[in-house]
Image 1 (tube, rainbow, N blue to C red):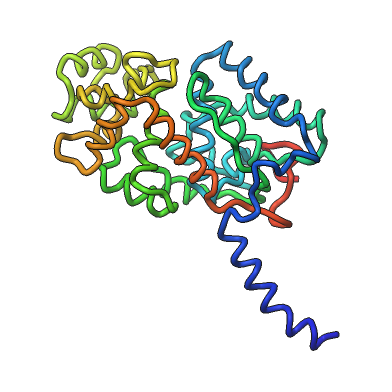
Image 2 (cartoon, rainbow, N blue to C red; image 1 turned 180 degrees about the vertical axis):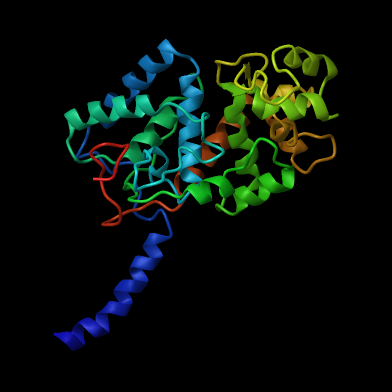
Length: 319
């Protein structure tokens, strides 16, 4: 018996390595038998939350992005700190910034009632992100992820692109996750909804030259130049339709009315991404199509599958 296990172990190991680094075990029909009411359970909770606070759609979408960029799409971002465990919530890109955890808690409670112990928090987050794009494109979400038993404070600090990012930094950080420049520009379009804090765009509206002067002045009225003053004052990421998922974000960029430094980096007259921004600004369909591809590709980043990880009972803590 010992000799036969020695013969087969390397082949099994190779297979596990091949599967572990891909989305080979993710499937759009993963819960069709084990939790057939998953989608009809998630959507009304998301819709109810957004009806009470419009900003939550953008918040949940951003949660998924910040999850996938650290360790992969494994719900590590949802884990609370404890005296013996440091999660990702207090890392610089997340602290006092990411939100929507209560929505995920509500969905988890509802899903546990429908099918106890079956659906991971990582998959709940993936579905909730899709359902947060109200009025935007729809797509079939690949599922089968499991939940991480760990988190990485240090990787959250290093791997999530900050709002001060240059174009080259954005391209390299997305590339490091297996995402193309097209994915990056299309996924940036999620900034067509939601709000940003003054501390995130202060540098752009006071120091940058690639910004419409009247737009900068308008934003300065609610964002004082001194750090520590009005840091949490909010402004819409999309000047025109901040609660509608459309292509106005790109139209703003062409007019040099991007709120964040990193937003306007996508369109600077001579940048390699200018043509994509122009294409999306003139065609909602092109933007929606590429956004869906980007979301699916991002959802494929290093999922835990098979017997890796766990199915958390509470999304905020390891079982």
